[in-house]
Image (cartoon, rainbow, N blue to C red):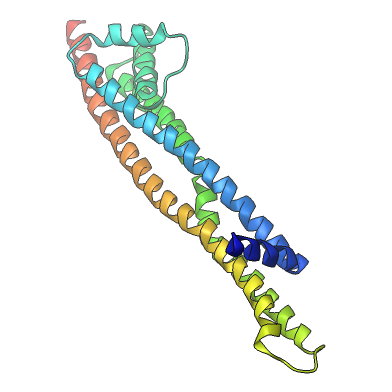
Length: 228
C-alpha cells in the first residue's frame, strides 16, 4: 500500500504537462485494450465460421442447396460464406441471362473479390490503432520524462543546495511517464503482430477458396455449354 500511495502521490505532484502526457497514454492504453478484446473475438469467430463453412462446402452436397440455405437465413454472411454467396449468386444470375461461359466465370470472380475485400476491411479495421499506439507511446512517454526532468533541474535553481532528496521526486515522477508509455505500447505491439499474422492467414484462406471455387464454377459453365 505504501508503494502504491507513493506512486499515486508522485503522479498527483507531477507538472501539468507530465500529467497530461500520462492521461493521454492511459487513454491510448484503454483504447488499445478495447481493440484487442474486440478484434480477438472477431478473428476467432471468423476462423470458426471458415472451418464450419469449409466442412459444409466440401461435404459433397449440392451447391445450389447450400446457397439457398444461406439465403434463407435472411442476413448477410461473413468470411467464406459471404464470398461463396456473392460468387454463386452472380454466377447464377449471369447464367439465367444467357451469358457466355467465360464471362460467367469472370463475373463470379469479380463478385467474390469484392466480397473478399469487404471481409479484409472488416478484419483489418482498427489494427492501425494498435500499430500507432505501439510505435508512438514510448516516445510520448519519453517526452513526458524529458519535460519532467527539465522541470526538476529548473527547480533546483531556486534552492540554496542541490541534493539528491531535492531532485529525486521530480525525476521519479518524470520516469513514471516512460513506464506508462511502455505499459501502453508493449501489449499493443504484441497484439498487432499476432492479429496481423492471423488476418494474413485468413486472407490466404480466402484466396485459396476463391481459386478452388472458380475451378468448380468453370466446370459448371463448361458442362452447361456442352449440354446446350
